[in-house]
Structures are given as C-alpha cells and as structure tokens.
Length: 317
Image (cartoon, rainbow, N blue to C red; front, side):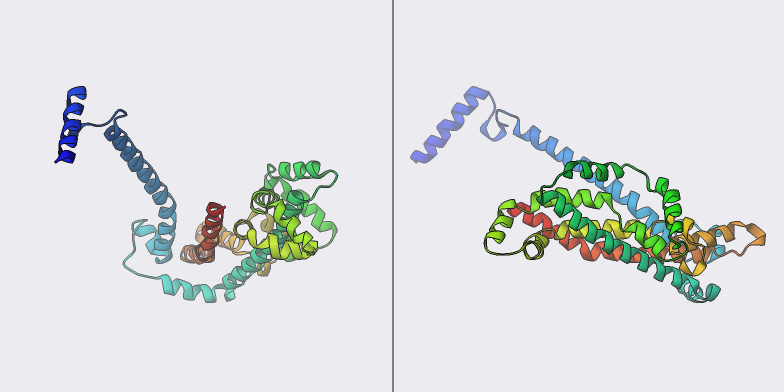
C-alpha cells in the first residue's frame, strides 16, 4: 500500500506540474516526437535504398529477359518482359557453333587476362602497400605521391603510350600486351597502404621480430592474415577492371582468336549494325553479354564473407 500511495502521489504531482496526465506525458525532450522523426528517417532511408536497388537490378533484369529472346522477339516484344518464345537455351547452343564457337574462345581469353592480371596486380599491391605502410626509407612519401597522382590519370590516356612502349618490345598482338599493363594498380597500392596502417599494429610486428621471426615470416604469418578483407577487395577490383577493359585490348590486339569477350561482342555489334549487308546476331550479343556477367556476380557473392569477417574484426578491435 505504501508503494501504491507513493506512485499515486508522484502521478498527482506530475499532473499538477505539467498539466498532463502521467500516461500522456512525453518527457522534457519530446520523446514521442523524436520517435516519429527517427521513424521518418528510417522510412526515407529505406525508400532511398529501394530506389538504388531498382536502379541496379533493372539493367540486369533487362539483360536476362533479352537473353531469352530471338532476334525477332528483341524488337517486337516488350523490353522488360519475356517473349512468347523462350530462346535462351537455343541462343546458348548457337553460341557454341557460331563462327566456329569463337565466343567461348573470347570468354576463355577474358578469364586468362582477368585472373592473370588481377592476381598479379593484387600481389604487387600487397607488397607495395605493406612496404609503404611499415617501412621507413628515403623518398617514401615522394614515390607514394607519384603513385597517388597516377590514380587521377584516366586509363584511356595511357593506351597510346602503352601501345608504343609494347610495340618496341614486339609483344603487340600477344596476351602479354593485355596482361602486363593490367599488373599495375595504383589504387590497389593506395588501398593496401591505408588498410595496412590500421589493421596491422606495429607492436605486433615488433613482438614477432623479438621472438626471432624474420621479415618474410612476419609478413606471411602475422601481417597477411590480417589483410584478407583488403586483399579480396583489391583482387575483385583488379579482376573486374581487367575483365571490363575494352580500349586497351581493342588497341593492342588484332587477332580474333586473342580478343576478350568485350571486344569480341563489339565486333558482332558492328556486324549487326551494318544493316542488310551484315549478319544480324542480336540474340547472340544479348545472351553472350548475359553469360559474361555471371562469373563476376558469382565472385562477389562467394567472396563477400571476407568483407563481413573484416568488419567483425574491426568491431572487436
């Protein structure tokens, strides 16, 4: 009874001071108003994310729908819906045989260029970024400034100088003409240096050296496991950049057997745009484009757990 009386006295006192019953009192800062504002912000952010999701999904949806149509259906049926004839498997079958199945050769070339260039660029970025972050040497800031400045240079501006340089060594129209320039990733070096500075404490490296570990063992057993999220990020960026590279292979390759899928599909597009004098292979272009994006989508889906692991490590720290 004493407790009930105390509560009743507090409620009466609150009603007397504020003029509002206790069950309707909102507090000194308008807690209910803050809740409404926070709810409105959440709704706004959700709407914004939905709009972004639609923006990214619509092109993929169109590409998938277009890959299921034949050439006639591409121009006669709705753009974002299926035609009466589902021709995806027949299009893929025609890809095997058109021009001797050269599309699959282009797809294999893209895998070769992307993974050779991407893995090589990642290895160089790891070593360079770790060196810039954890070692002190003369001219370090100046060299890193040059690398950082090269990030601002468009890649298309370097194609002609790269072509002239490669032609002097006689490797034009060879796979090395695409792989060697892809090994350089200034942004990857920058990203690895920034991440290494925060993810690998100097005290941990010093402790390993005190325990008798050499520099190579310290790098592979202490530093490298902590850099997995950044390594995966640089690897994916390098692979995707090389896979989608168009202007460099177009400039340095002339043999149709060496073309990546991007340049090869462009040749088919030019052939189809020729009108009555050319061969209409729009159905092969759309189905080939759809198949070419599947490896990249799968790579992001299977490797995203490394990013999640990196975020969890950061939260524990």
